[in-house]
Image (cartoon, rainbow over all chains, first blue to last red; front, side, top):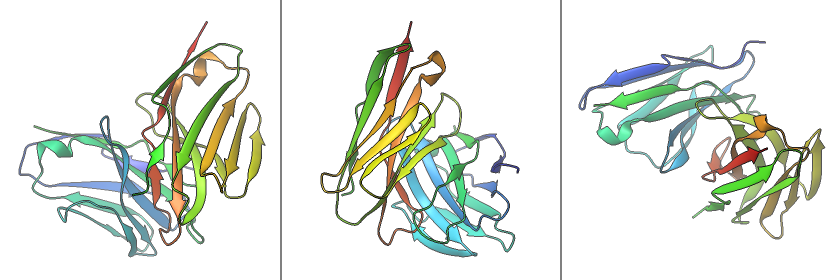
Length: 114
Length: 111
């Protein structure tokens, strides 16, 4: 069974630009969660999508948004990038029918904002 | 807040046993996970506890006491490849699959 995939793996952007990251969950998984990982803050929850609906949201500004498609693939978008958005962005998928449930992480997208 | 506390660093010897502790806020607790993360890689799932007691999986065991808001991960017969960050993560009622992570314990296994 293929694991969680994320594209792109690495990205360099300039302040003020916007970026879209993609996540394809494990086949059969309907929940996709997004996390930001930085050395100072560790792993922080951004949001979770289940069956195309945002089910939970973390404490991030509105510049961070996401969506989920009917095939459970998910995208997250960050607008008006700031230097502090440089981080590893991880998505995790699970069956998500009951919560919480075992989640499997993708390899992440390393975003650098200059 | 929903603070998850775990030691920042630990060092142990190859072949030994190490216990990594994690404490959390008990209100709304709905499950605890342990993940292993090697440098530059994604976290990988190790264990899940929702009821009190010990869960054993090969060289790794995880313990939970819900009343004390306490868990530990026990690693036996340590190997060099066990050098990694170990993340404690807690789910809370109403949070769906949202996990609140501790900052991780960096374990270094030495010869």
